[in-house]
Image (cartoon, rainbow, N blue to C red; front, side, top):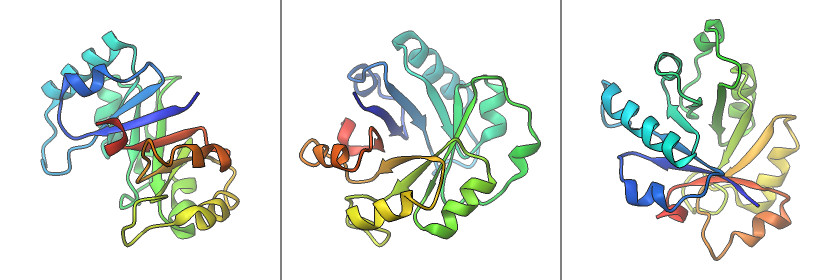
Length: 172
């Protein structure tokens, strides 16, 4: 029913094993300056074996080089240099935004989907239901709910007509 995006920052097979084939795995490790290509290829192979798509965060060039399924551009990344790269046919670029200004940046970056955050998680960029709905109306791009989604509030996504969501804690 739902298309899910699961953010991981380390390779743990037990959490990936629990996911259905509709779950896209997004590897993001911002603590390491130099990406570990060997680890990324290991995760790619494991995801392929399980039938999951695999995206790399914040490094489109490496995602293309390693022949991954896609890339994720976080809200703090405002560059458009990836537009000069050539992608394979089914390569997807997605990105996150917290407000209208960041939505416009993601549109300029030509992402296929915009992850709007944080829907439920009460942090300094917390949107809430009403603001989330109003932001979705400012773009023609597909939107994905991100942040604070749990087994308790997932039914609210149906009310919002959101059938895609992303997160971390929901999957663990």
